[in-house]
Each structure stands twice: as structure tokens, then as C-alpha cells.
Amino acid sequence: MKEFVVPLLVLSHAYAVSSLKRVCEQQLEHGLLNLENVVDIFQLSLLCNAPRLTLISHRMILSNFKAVSATEGWKSMRNSHPGLEKELLESVIEEENNQKEKIRKSKERKIYLELFEAMEALVHICRDGCRTIGPHDKDFNQNQTPCKYRACKGLELLVRHFAGCKLRVPGGCIHCKRMWQLLELHSRLCADSTSCRVPLCRYLKTSVISL
Ligand SMILES: [Zn+2]
Ligand SMILES: [Zn+2]
Ligand SMILES: [Zn+2]
Image (cartoon, rainbow, N blue to C red; front, side, top):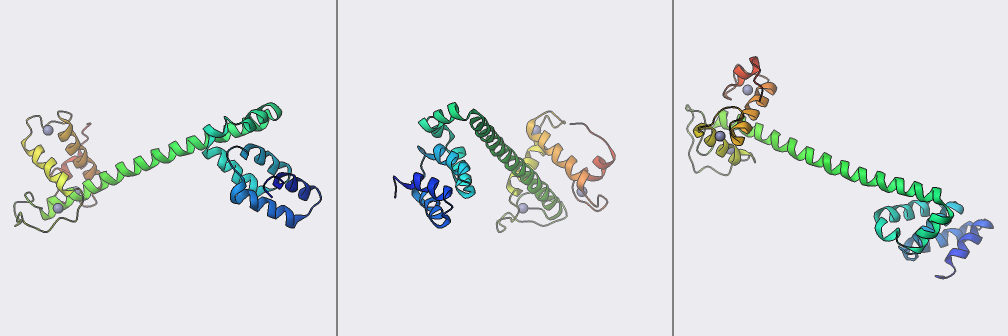
């Protein structure tokens, strides 16, 4: 079957023997298709109207582009069907851009999530107190069970730094700058500044500080 699969595919297509054609397609799909022949099979699948095979070989080309573009099959396609080569190159570039976009989006999501968690922890610390810091009117002890707010520990350090930093002005030090940003962002998003325990919440809402 192995050596005849390609001629059989062509013949079964030409004579409309659909059951044989299906067998050939399956044989290719499940093992006979490889990096060496994928460009030929891709072209053949277009000629023989075998959309599933087209899709599978197209995917294989895109995900192994470097290796595939060095094969004899690719070189001869470049000579015989330059238009097809161009189309494939375009889809390779599109695929790369999609990947980049995906990475960019996931980074963005991560930053957003971190920010969200920091804001949550800020409200939590100012409202409940946690470990070593919190509002003066709360009792809190240092041996509590681990805090459920993931950003709490980091924020605790940040608040401690903020309280002691000599450069505590917007833009003066990166840690303090982060703290100012959190405070400002919190205040912008806070639904109820009148009862909010976060420092400067109400103040920042009414004033514009550029950081
Ligand atoms: Zn906490
Ligand atoms: Zn600082
Ligand atoms: Zn607030």
C-alpha cells in the first residue's frame, strides 16, 4: 500500500471510487504522511479534492515550516506553483502573528490578574488587618492561619516599605510608585469611598495626581 498510495489516490479520485479514495486518505493521515512528502501530498489533496487531507497537511507544514521548507518537495513546488508557495508563506506569517498575539494577551491577562489581586489584598489589609499590619482598631495576631489573599504577603511588605521610605513621593522610588498606583487605581474603582478604609481613597477620587 505504502508505495501505491499516491497513484491509488489519484486513480480513485479520477474514477470516482470513493471507498478506495477514503482508504488512501486514511492511510496517509495515519502514518504515511511525513515531513518529506507533506508538500506533495498537500498539492495532491488540492487536485484530488480531499479537504481533510488538505487541512492536515497544511497544519503539518505550518507547524514544521523550517524543516518542510528545506525539502525537495518544497523546492519543486516553488518552481511549479509559485503562487501556492506564496500563499503558504503568508499563512506561516499569519500563524506566527497569531502565536505572538496569544502570548501578548496571556501576558496582559497575567498583569491584570496580579493587579486585581493586589487591589483585593489592599482592601483586605486596610479593612481586616493581616499578620503584622492593619487598621489600629482591629486586633490581629501574628500567628493566623495562612491568608487566603495571594497578594497579601507581598502587599504587606510594600505597605511596610511605604510607611518607612524616605523617598515617599510619587515617582521617588519604584516600590512607592507601585503603592501610589495601587492607591490611585483603587480609589478610581472603589464603589463606596465614604465607608472605605483604604488610605487616601476619598482624597484621590477628587484630585488628579499624575504619576
Ligand atoms: Zn492577608
Ligand atoms: Zn519607597
Ligand atoms: Zn476605597
